[in-house]
Image (tube, rainbow, N blue to C red; front, side, top):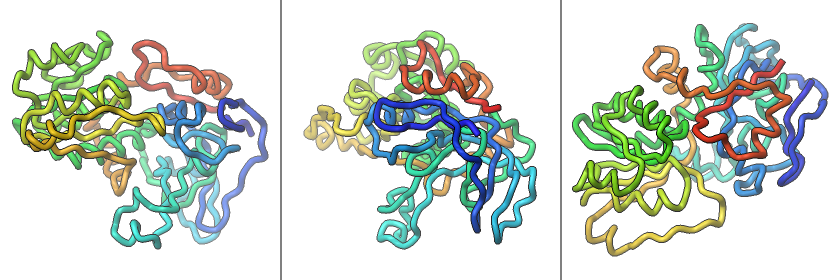
Length: 329
């Protein structure tokens, strides 16, 4: 079969590899759609820890075509994959903080993932999504990560929320915050993404920090940082009202730092929180997608074959691009 393999930092390509087979407790999935994530680009550039050589792809959906010993999942079941496999026995797992597992093994990062014709995953990480088109089912993982961040921020009806960043996480966050009853302002430089946010339920948009401050002079109750760049991480507290809260969902390169004024956070009692991956939220995300409560159709910018995936991962996203889906076969 064909697979997109990260051979080493800065070296990625489409290669032929043997077809995998499921072991006990595993299922073999024929991949039908897989999303390119900003983390994939971080992995390529060596800005996020992983274990090459490895087949990338942690946002995917497909069809179960074989089951290992002890698995009764019907063949033909469409599933999405929760890629994070916690050990279940470390201190963090025993505290219920599975996203902080000391031995977490992530599919598409530490073991072979979904940028391939076939992938083997543990059966307990396969979540059935019958009736949901694979292009939409592939959004379950990014939606699950966004859900965790919004859970931490806990917006309530009538609150004012600012979302920084118009990528896929930001536009999913707009919908989740709006579904919670909040008034939502998206801040991004891209005009097309501002228009898209308005169509998805944003109350208003801004291109710059100054424009956002003019719209909300007292600041927002909750700021969701979804861009993963120093500028927006530093901006987030400045756009938060006194007594408000910030949740950072964006992934910055490992080792990069930002400047924050602790006195300002102290004097205005700003809560600064970070959100990491998707503890216990993948099934909720799949259900929301299946029930049509989140619109992913306008978030799909391009659908490409496996042959084009290495170039798409190795280069920055195109201007205005939200989500690129890779479809094998």
